[in-house]
Image (tube, rainbow, N blue to C red; front, side, top):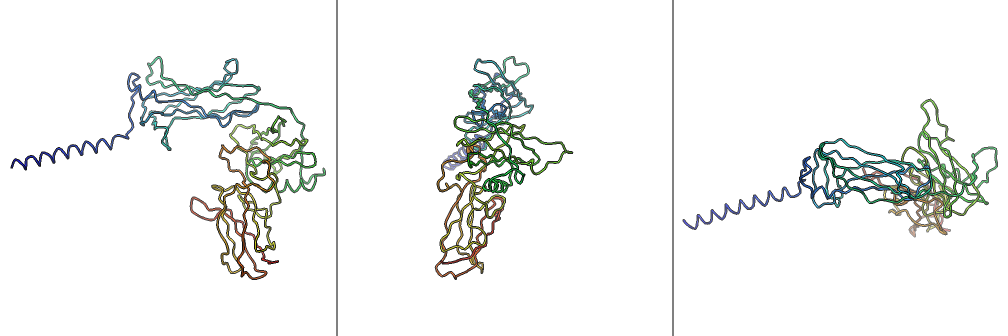
Length: 420
């Protein structure tokens, strides 16, 4: 009997321990709730850190500076802040420590969830601010977060972000002249072809540059419902800066096709070009990558442009395929079939090759922005030995939609096999 009592007692103690352990597991990741009392939970509040993020540190006069302001939890545990009135202050100082710009963002929310910064899907409070500086020089960008946990609190908790120094740069103004295709003025045929091929990139904010016979030609395409105008060209030590303005017309003012793009030329500089948007919205240009010139586009879809082979070309047992693409993860799929729809070859390549003789991109690109540029690709195909002479072939290029797996932006190129 005594042994049974001991066994039952041990079982009860085990169950109690298990319940406590399970409850500990279920609550260890639950957020700590911080009420609006400043004298409590100061350790957790001390882990909050303000941040300011810029996409670059060099800007041109008149260019908008887009700043990201955030408040992150640097601690190890998530927590919820209730009853707070957070404010983010954005200030820009000149080199003499005078305030040039001061802006404030307020949020009126009842609850904020802050998860640790190392968590990929972290929650944080953030906002965006845009500012413009017109005078060249160095400036200091400072952000501060204020957390007023109680309306009667005279000294709210605040934290500063690390200051960032930026520079407004300038250069020598260059004279430029407009080009209008198909106008009475004489344009070299090669330049005319280059403009026509640039217009085939029917996407917002495509830009391109070409030097020919002592002149540097610049192509700029606008976004939908935005007229475009080149405002200024600056020649700097290592680049040419082209300031471009975008204007949204009134509803009763239709936009002509010619207003959606601009072509100008300057004296050749031998320098790459940086296009600078002067606009009231965030604009990112896209251009060619990995190829220093634009060949003739012989076949195309909205996001794949093919240079070789052209439709109805005679191809041998070995031939190359080249072009540029702006597709998901830069992945271009291909398939080669015969006249009976038998697949002779298929696969995929990752765009991002360098063209033969490549020295530099004609336009300065900002890879860190994650903008989908038009990346160069080239690959070779080898046909089977027993392929019949004069066999009709079809080359297909496309990319696979990550959403539903469908073939997207299909390019179909008919070819003919010739062994000699």
